[in-house]
Image (cartoon, rainbow, N blue to C red; front, top):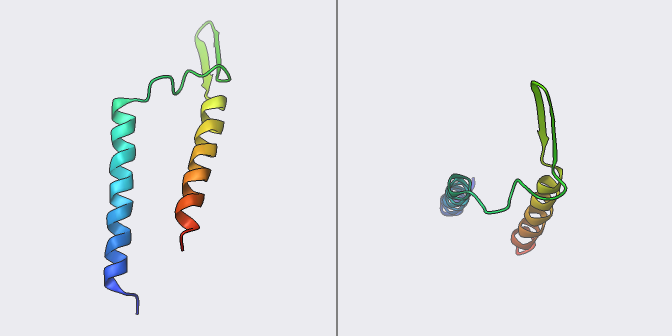
Length: 73
């Protein structure tokens, strides 16, 4: 049977992380989404935006942060 105190702590931390992420998305991060490696193509009625550099940057940052948190165990 899992310890309810540790489950409560994990749920609280997950909620706090989601709230922080929501706040960042709501306020916007300056420069994020318009990096030099992002692809934007516009031809007539068609436009395509593919945030390649933004995706790579976010992947690296999230990997580092998750490694820091998960290695503490």
